[in-house]
Length: 387
Ligand SMILES: NC(=O)c1ccc[n+]([C@@H]2O[C@H](COP(=O)([O-])OP(=O)(O)OC[C@H]3O[C@@H](n4cnc5c(N)ncnc54)[C@H](O)[C@@H]3O)[C@@H](O)[C@H]2O)c1
Ligand SMILES: [Zn+2]
Ligand SMILES: [Zn+2]
Image (cartoon, rainbow, N blue to C red; front, side, top):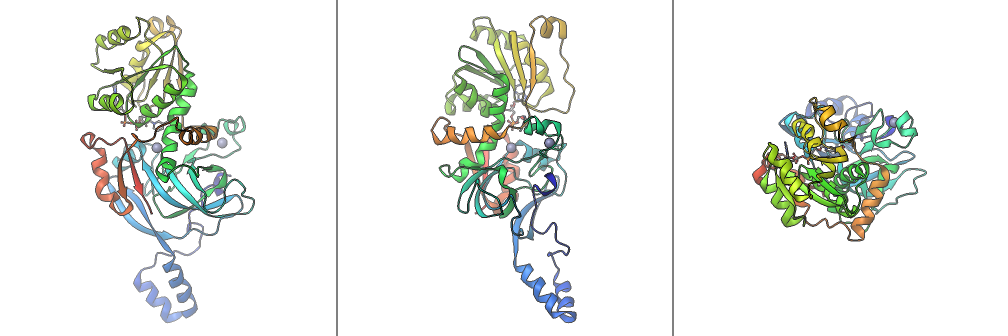
């Protein structure tokens, strides 16, 4: 159930554990037993990082989680990956992000204790976290589309997430990954977004797949297009992002967007005039998404994995209808994607080495975070070390 899906320590408690010195003094004077209980709780605080409002990090202390209930697990957070959602949350540009909020949805964790009935993990296990909290009851969930639950909440976006020391999670959202490093565990969720997008595209050997947008989401799709055996071509406005694709991801075919007809011609030259069987747009730009159709081959498929709040306008009869294109959305990922990705990393079929470009210690985050917004920093994936 969603209501019990994520229970942060302290939230269900009746009295606050964040006491001021004056309140402690008053309590000590009038009620020694209560004071001693509260001062004990005061010791059981842990650190967390909160976005108090856009552009404002706050180092806070929150209560230790309670013991895990049935079906829940208490975990120690080891790593937190930072993604565009967190950057957008910091900037105040994420529509689903509310404040104050403890971010963190890309998590590598270690199991500390398990509640009754939990059999999939045990203390000491390292896990990746599926941060999509779903209700298990709506029409989507009942049909297995847990990625687009009608009551969906992403941890760290619509409810508090993992930028803290310990949290309680539903056991069913933990994916055992003992052979992965904590960094790799934190990377699984980003990869899951690309995995699901490529499943939607159903690319196969012999096809040309154009990925527009070479940020982490486009790159995660790239990993799965490669695995499908299709040929990948990557397009971006940014030459430095394209250089990363060529030099670090081993994909030679890149095209820099100029925003005119020469882009379609360049793609035609690379594909024997056929254009792309699949176009995956991972830009988040409504202009790029509208243009994505122009790059699709006749009977091609287009997947929008990037997200925009703007309307997207494109010509129907001359392009979509004439070419009989199929347009698909892609949201989050499925449970099975997490299991698959962990196996692919274990088997060396996904090389995670190019991915993590920046690390920061937990306490450094408020200071270094603004630098991760600057393209010249060259961040693909920054990971916070919580230990
Ligand atoms: N489907 C999902 O569930 C899901 C999950 C997470 C993120 N997202 C979305 O995926 C998108 C990409 O995320 P990211 O973290 O990789 O972002 P990013 O900003 O790091 O990368 C986007 C890339 O697109 C390029 N780009 C922008 N406009 C372009 C244009 N007109 N033509 C060509 N290239 C252009 C940029 O240069 C950049 O390299 C965002 O919209 C994000 O919200 C979707
Ligand atoms: Zn993310
Ligand atoms: Zn649901």
